[in-house]
Length: 365
Image 1 (cartoon, rainbow, N blue to C red):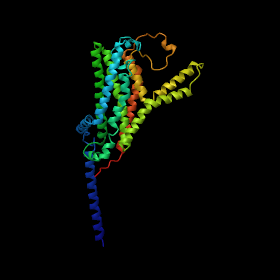
Image 2 (cartoon, rainbow, N blue to C red):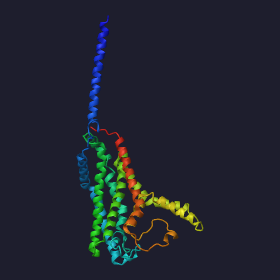
Image 3 (tube, helix red, strand yellow):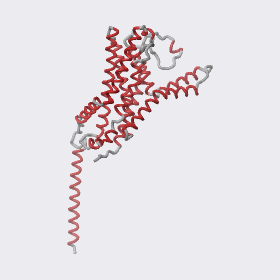
Image 4 (tube, one colour):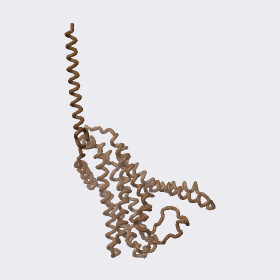
């Protein structure tokens, strides 16, 4: 009668040993695969696949028709703005700017425009057409891969998923940096040929900082368009959403702020504190727009005579020396605006990263 009980106990004991053996194997396997496991150094992420994707995306951008057409339009606009600036300098328009006289004549190649020609300056063209470069490079970054069915195949390869979205952003940002610095240095070269003498070290540094700020500004619109490309499955929807926000901040936002200013305006006989609060309110609302932040930044960097970006009081004017600001003082003046542009760009990229990592990717047959 005791034989069945012994057989069952023996079988249970063998199953327990087998289970313990499988648990030990699983624990060892997890220890080997886990980064920074027991006795194992953290595994380094290979960057070869990431840079391969970056090079592939750069090649696709450079060989696309839409990028070539957009670059043709921007180059023509750049040449027109250079001709307008040269005409203004030759007609004596350089003496009518910013309080710096002819001290920073080379910077006026980027800000001056001829009154006889209805052509904006180079900085104005860059603030208008720059966002179009970012939107063009990012509005179909993800949804086109998804609609073609290549996203699932790509992510099924032994690569990290976040490398895909980072490669999209880095490749487009490299293209933007090359385009912006090429156009800026083209203006500098034509200005050198026209004016006849090279820029001073401070002028050269101001121009490079201006171009770097332009890359950050266009990078914000790139991140925004990539975010819409992840959120919407149709490329047309993401493109229209990005263009709508660009038009809103470029045209309609200023109109709305003017309406708010008119509705909340205080009387001219009001106390100075009330008038100052009203001006600060309107200025704060304007600075919620990335376009306004970029405009204030480039106006300060390219016009050293700009000494303040807000309302001036008599206390601030007492003892002030009528001279242009140094490069360090101009950077301190625009540091909040530059920080705001960087923060907006990082927020858009962070939202794009989180949204893409949480989305389900299915392969198409």
